Length: 589
Image (spheres, rainbow, N blue to C red):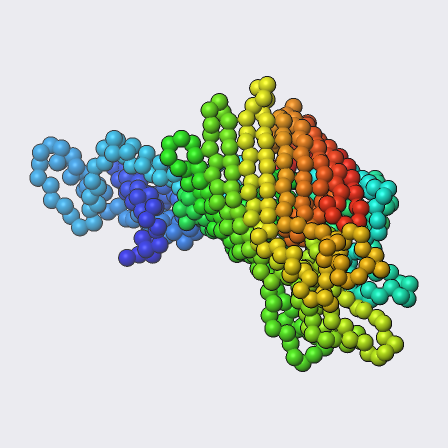
């Protein structure tokens, strides 16, 4: 087998045969009229071969092999040509013809067959050209069509307005991030305190997110998203401008693989968007910007023939891994203390008469390793104690806390009390979420509700150890209050609920679309972990209640203006009311 025949892919074999037939036909026609001459550059067969090489249909080696065959056939000696033509005439006269050595016998190919061969070759070349996108103008390679780019940009004006009757508040998040901090203020040095009195206005802030998804196959998708953010905290990708025109940080916001096993079931692994059904910008548990690390499986399937769809989501998510080298100043390292979230949600949605739609779900979230642990006796001079790593990896404000260190003075004159703080309660929230979409005055209207209860809440657990009583959420306690009265004056709770009504288009994505929303939120201190909640309402956390309202108007396709007013205050403890005004311009693509 020669080289040209060996390297042809199957789709081009008919093309090669057609080219050889064309060469033979060319030679036969030349022999029937005149002695053969070397093929010129105008030869149709050779020009076609060169064109196919230029287009990439044939490789350079395949083209050179075919050209060599065509040129050899065109230049072959024609010693038997006259005899062949004469024989053809004799055959036409019915005479017997004897062939001689050197004669070339050409099978007659009718015009109809030649046209059929030409059309088949043409169709195969066109089909391959379309498949490989090299014969269509303004087109791209096939892999480009499997890439999707999306993103959004938001510009915001924000004002944080603090109530005039607010009390000072210890910033426990700052203590845990930079501590330990001496909590004995006998020296006159106070621990870190939050701003609770001075308004912060004229804050210009941005959010930008850019994501890319790639369809690896019909079932496997990979995704990556980058986002802005003032820190690596999990609940916000908003960046405050200023800072001397310094460049802003970009973070890896998402990175995941998603595999669809069936039309009803898929699994996502990596860092990805919240897989659970929740209320946008108003959820009790999760911030709208929060992404989950871990793996989640999602099932969605129509039920019956009445437009009802059932869904379920289950996932395992690592929240925090203990430091491999803790404590760094000791040869005896602490055992692993990892924090996990195991979650399950099930629900359904369906259509009612008149175009109404309802959706509801129940979810159970099981957090492990979140509660702090009181240390063994630890010298105040020690750089670390054995339970320092049980403090939260990230926190905002609101959860009940206690001092982790069981400090032992270095000497009788030592009154220092360096501390970190941990969570008093475990968390097993049960969450119910529902919404009803209908029309009022022929305009869209949605009524939404959510309720949460921490099934692991235990008031007595907080007071099991007199040396580790809660550090916050007391009412009527001062330095003269006996320790025995602390439990009766402590306030907390495991419940939370939210109600919201949206009038107009829930998602404003076109010019002229609009909505108006009004809602109320109530969240007791230990209903959910405060580290993952909405960072805007009362500037984040739990132990909050109040109302919120907003409006949005579409100014163009995928562009809209939005205004929101969030008014929150404490449920228990010292007064802390914060109102937040946000004016935004949003665009997405």
